Amino acid sequence: MNQSWHAPGRVNLIGEHTDYNEGLVLPFALTQGVTVTGARRDDGVLEIRSGDLEARVELADLSPGRITGWAAYVAGVAGCLRAAGHPVAGASLRIASDLPQGAGLSSSAALECATALALTGLYGLELDCRELIDLTRRAEHLYAGVPCGVLDQSASLLCRGDHALLLDCRSGETEQIPFLLGDHRILVIDTGAAHDLADSQYAARRIACERAAARLGLASLREVADLGAALAALDDPEEIRRVRHVVTENRRVEKVVRALRAGDVPRVGPLLTASHRSLRDDYEVSWPEADLTVETVLAAGALGARMIGGGFGGSVIALAHRDLIPALGLAVADAYAARGLRPARLLEAVAGPGARALA
Ligand code: GAF
Image 1 (tube, helix red, strand yellow):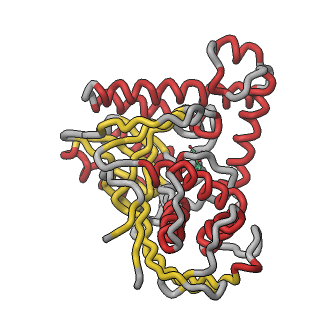
Image 2 (image 1 turned 180 degrees about the horizontal axis):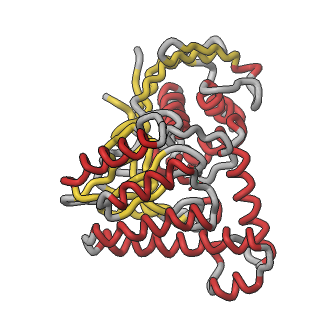
């Protein structure tokens, strides 16, 4: 009998490029995501279908690098389960997604998490959330070659409806923060720009942060207590910019959490914009369409806006009064048309539940 599991994509409200620096992140899950429907088979084959695409993986031959493209995310989870000694002997899996791909909404982590729930469910394996996060992240590192932090997999597995997830990536502690926007809304604007440089630049940012932390004699940039003193102790201008982003971004996460706890949604807006400017100027991961989108929605009355995800392509979020959302869409459409860009795709984000088995 076929069973189904669903894992959502995410919007990271704030806390970008902080996860691998042992910092704070504040994502919420989208109601859109990836559903994996499947049945167990015991012939050593993983058969995966997604729309018209099909992949057949012999599990005995599976190792990192052998499978590329979309199927690597699914095969990677099976490979990592087997490498950890779990007796996964095959499955037929069908993938369905209503999450735009390449939009920076974490479709790959959603696919990994839905696959992990499917395979552990089909084989009756008891892995807790931490183990599932480790497993799916390992699959991404080894099979997709992206040295990501814990943000995306944690968001997909741990978020709850109507809440944002405050995750301390140093201690692993989590807290569900009520995320009720009242008359405000979060609009996701997929800029349509491809993440061409994303993987190499992501790894380069990570290395620069580790190098700066080592120079400061710290285990991670989370340990920076006095930003001014840390910046004065560094002489590489690139490291100075990276450190300034990471340390100020952690502070912005704390401020957003305080504003949400106080029910003061408008106070979140300028913090989102400050995050964008820091990602643009200090972390240098923004891209022209994101900058255009942020400035366009701000001029049209948004309370705040910023790029989300790793950068170099994907989406921008805008926080605005709900009555302004249509005007923001029109302003973006005009700005894109004036520059000959393909129209942006728009999505109103609602904080949905985390990954789960479907009845
Ligand atoms: C990507 C990574 F996968 C996350 O771990 C995180 O570092 C993010 O970029 C930037 O905040 O989504």
